Image (cartoon, rainbow, N blue to C red):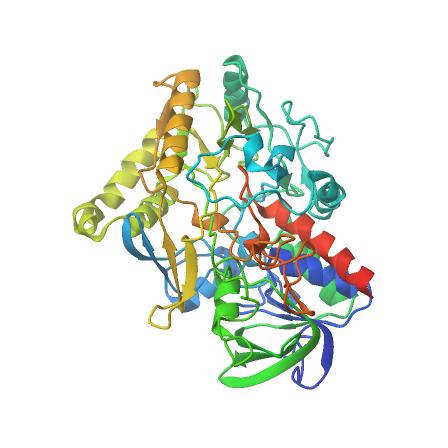
Length: 539
């Protein structure tokens, strides 16, 4: 088979206008905009080229990335997942587990259920306006306002084909294209929630809902129905605007002088070489981007690259999420959109920020329950594991029967930034990094309050909480290279350029100074569009 025309040949020879490290949500968005404007762009991606047109099955069979058969590194990479476990020290003990992180073109967006919601205007305000806990070390005010991001939210919603209905509690909401009708079950649940005095709306989802839509929450969508960053951004950049891709290529370090990144050192197929770009844009994810910067130590940068503030890797935020099953009356049909309902009645309660409540976007069957329980078991203290492991499969089968007609929702509770919640390089772990996270009492209290409010409003017999105490949402990591106007309190400036380097930008979820109470994906995409405009304005 001839080499793909989209893959870079002799990539260490030219000086690219832009080298983008990571072809996930932030990287694909900003890189595609710059390529569209005529810049020469090279994407460097650790994982596979999942969106390669030559790899699409021609006989209607499933794409290899949509089939998960095990947890070997090769199998995980084939499915667009991070290939090795990550390790951390937490309030729940030392953990090593497979996190819900993407690895491959499209990044974690290939796995998401494509709920693309805006943050709310109050998320951009200083802490004093919504009275967060005194224990928090939350850095104040975002360097930009909601109004600054609003046109980019709108552009990102168009780019990712977002559909849904207005949130009746959001005064800043816009009209979106209408989604398909709800399933019989979800229509019943929608009416149930509204009948309890709540304000449900159709979730804002980046999906085209083509015929025979498979609701690909949790895995790669080969039908170009779910709009991940690969379909919406990367492929247009490669096919229409001359961008190139280095796939299966691991970035080892960034080499920099006093004011500029000079080379990106990589390894591909056992060979090590360097690529050069006038601009380097880092988008390896909120766990790996700071690790790469910290690993790029030199005589010029003894604390790690761009780390004069000492904040690279710090202020890690994860969100917390409880899974909640709500059983409808009878056995209504479930065929239809799975990511369908959201509400924000509990986003801010008596001045305390909680967050959103939304459908999970996955069907409830014994295999999904088994995967969930196995993931929970791997994150529990080790002494539990021999006790619970033999019961996972029978428990999953029983729960699958009990909940087969239930709707499964999730809370998303805002996590606050604390400097001692952080990530560091660690060559002794499979992933080369380790995170440290202390689960604060104020976060526990806000989760407990959310559960109490749901029980009080819906009734204890109406819903079942499926999780446990450790409800950290590792798919929503953010905050480890926060942006701001003060170089002493942030890593990046308001345009996501490193304060101390003229040609280094970071555009993944690392930039977020606070996590808000909803999915971060749309905010990452909208901000990447904003950063692309700022780069182009520089000339």
